[in-house]
Image (cartoon, rainbow, N blue to C red):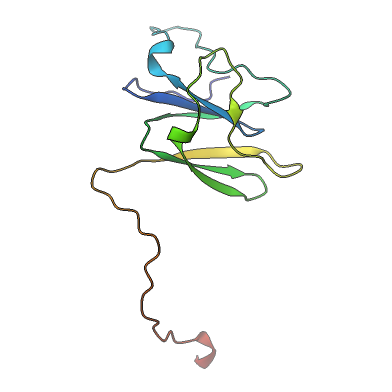
Length: 133
C-alpha cells in the first residue's frame, strides 16, 4: 500500500506507525525507481508497532505534530527521533492511550530567522459578551 510520495531533497524521511513508533532514515538509503517501480519498504511493521501511518521529509530543525484517534496531540522536535536504517521498526515517539491509534502527522517547518513566541503576557482587553444581544 502506498503511504506517501516524497520528492527527493536533502534530509531524512520520518515514518510513524499507528502504535506510536517512528524513525528517521537518510534519503540516500532509499533506492531511486523509474516509472513502473514496485515501491520501497520504508519500515518493518509488526503487531508491536502497527501499520505505517505516514512519511514526511524533515530536517533536524523541524518539528512534527502527531494526532491520535482519541484527539491527543503531541508536538516534538525531529532531532529527538533516532536516525535508523530502512529495515528497522523504529523507537517509541508517542504512547497512545489505551485503545487509541496514531492517525496522522504533519511537519512544522523551521523558518530561518523565526522566533518561537513563548506566550508573552499581554494586557487584558474587555471582550463584549453575546449575552447582551
